[in-house]
Figure 1: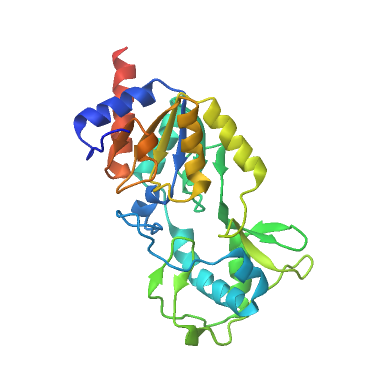
Figure 2: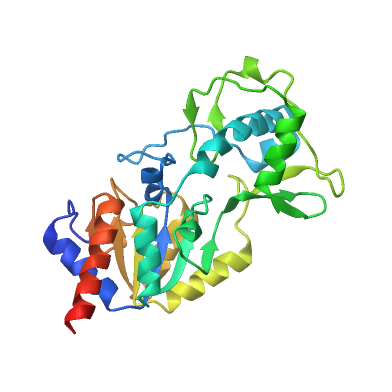
Length: 286
């Protein structure tokens, strides 16, 4: 188990050396997007910020829960859709451009890696910018759905008390009265954000692709994840089992620390650009 570090020069130097070696696979979590204004699921202590996220079972079986979700998500999309990549996202894309990354796996559903210039991203949990019909499987753009919801709910503007990391917001249930949910234009079926809810399984092809990337890595670099849920932690466990070195950059505790050789507790928007700078400087010198 690695000693924890507060982002000091020596640890960042060591991490820059590891990344500079290449063969890095990144596993990113919600902590990478907090500097873009998107809240994470857990604070520095690891405690959940939200006790009752939407589950697949509630969404599909309970029309009231589904209407509540879409009303809240309709308002929350303004925060998610307007978010812009931060220095951490751009640094990851630059490392990919420099040839240091062999793969990029994200647990995030905000699309900010791609907006920051990255490509070939494995989106474990999907993307809020897409909508899927659970009946016919047809996928559409979220912007198109937002236009339809605006048209079906003119003047809907409930007071928002908090934005949640999964793209919806907290509002008083009394303000949900009269909100209209729209259905699939292709078949009239049930629409859902193209993301993996709690109680739903990650598509097996995404999991197998992620394990394939980890198996070929020299370093698994975890960015901004508490690794509390097995969806992401399983890749750290596999890396440790296979003797692949694990580095973690995160603000606060993580459940991956017993398996990591290097842990830096510091803002990703500061550490990652610094690593890029050191790698670029080394390339110029040699």
